[in-house]
Length: 131
Image 1 (cartoon, rainbow, N blue to C red):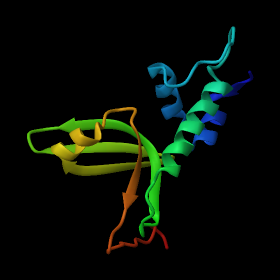
Image 2: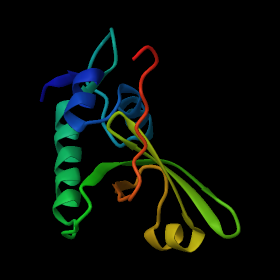
Image 3: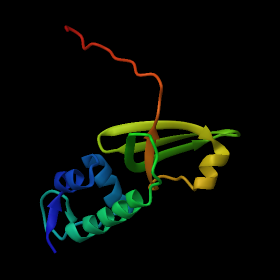
């Protein structure tokens, strides 16, 4: 099957180029067959990952929250009671603070496919400098 540039794979998966490189290093994606030049990604492995993500999204329960960002866990820090979970959702980095028990029950670890669901009653709007 064809190879994709890292940027093409990132665009298809809705993640950053750096995330694709991390997935290549971790074995989540397969490196393309190239003899020299820039790193490429095997298109078949991208297709498989996209299918997995599609199934994950299809399993979501209906809810009223509209701010739902599918992504991948990039970092989990746990202490005695709390856990800090970082998610890369496309170009967005989302951080969640939850109980350690919740993180353990969900089995959250770097590489876990998740969705960050954000529901808030407050939205802060800032003007860009010079506006």
